[in-house]
Image (cartoon, rainbow, N blue to C red; front, side):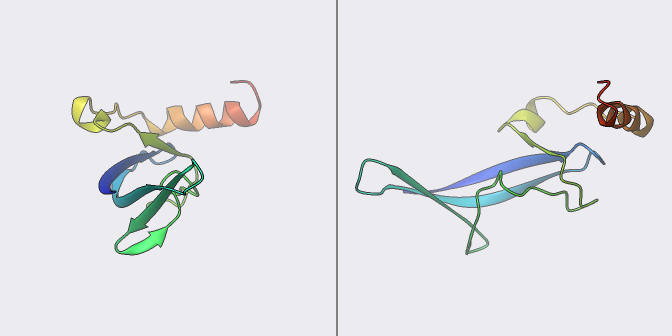
Length: 95
């Protein structure tokens, strides 16, 4: 069975949002297990949650948004200085 899925992402570094569409093939492996294959633009690829990086800034601090999240409620935009303070506190293990 093949279906189309749209995955939405948000970079926590630069707050860039984007989405990618995947064709997902699901079947049985004949031994009681499930097999899931992902393809994008006609080429097989790794799963949508592996090795994520932002296409805008190249950062690896990326969050996957649930389906319907962006349409139901827009994400609040935070100021850059607030994010920098949070990241600085995390590096100091104070947050």
